[in-house]
Amino acid sequence: MKTFPLFIALAVTLGFILPAAAQEETVTEEVTVIEGHSPEEVAARIAELQTYLTHRQERATEITNDMIALDDRIEGRIEKIVGMLDGITDSLESSRRVAQMKKEAIAALENTINFYDQKRRSLQEETRQRNPRISREELFSDIGKFDDRIDKRVNQMLDLAKSMQSHKDYDKWNVAYGGGGGLWGDGYYRTRNPRYYQNRQEATNTQQEVKQLVEEIKVGIDRLQRSNRDIEEKLKANITPQYRAMLEDELTRNNGIIETREGQMEDLVMSQDPDTKTVGRNQALNIESMIHDMASDLSQDNNHLFALYHELNLEREAINQINHKLEALGAEPPPSPIPASEVPPTESGAPATQ
Image: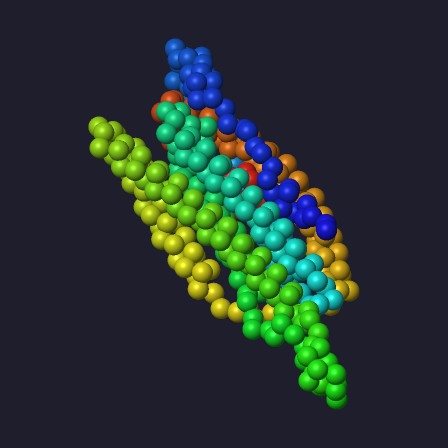
């Protein structure tokens, strides 16, 4: 059975976070050089920084637009793969080939969700740093984008799981009258019904997949509830209004996710028989080959997206440091030209930017 390089490629690990102390040292050193210079020299330095900032922002916008187009293409292909699989089921000829493709896709999507959740928690920790690599507003925006993407992947997993076959009342034996004789001497001949045995195996596999998904959702809910208890303890302390507002936003977001997950879990357990069509062996093989080719193309797109994110991440870091320098010189940094709502999270597991 072929695997899906698409989903393997989605779990690329990133590690571009600079230590806060190193960032602070860079900014402080630049300001120290400026101190003691004439107002004209300071004004010239501000103009130089603003020109540099504009250049960085324009480059970041170009990279962001490329990322948006590429991410849209990746998402469209993933949706096509999931849609292709959740509309079909096995026939006697295809045996369990379709069910196996669905099972592998669910497992791969689950791996990406776990990775996204890991990166989400890493971003949450960074928001609590005194001097984060990028602004806290950007970090919380990235967390929200991760939440949206995780929710999308969960729904795709549920669609695949609900499209798997449940128990059906097939007769265990096919019975035909032969005009005499027969197994019991009554003229009826009985043969094993292959649909009965295939459906029994399919139903067992579906029950296992549903049970595993429910357990995974419960684990996610428990993790969010533990996070909420930790946040509630922090809110009891004497903290700054800004930090309090961030924690309250995080608590609200977590509660919303918990409510969504509970609804998804109920929907999965109460799902009805899927509306699918059976495919023969050759058709199943063709679909498998088509998905493999699409996933291979997606793997290349994902690598490109990863490279773009790395480049964009460097621009974000530079922009943030320039803004710090301008603020230290008493200058008002211009607003970022990149709309927050325009930038998607990357499928390489990297957070999006704004």
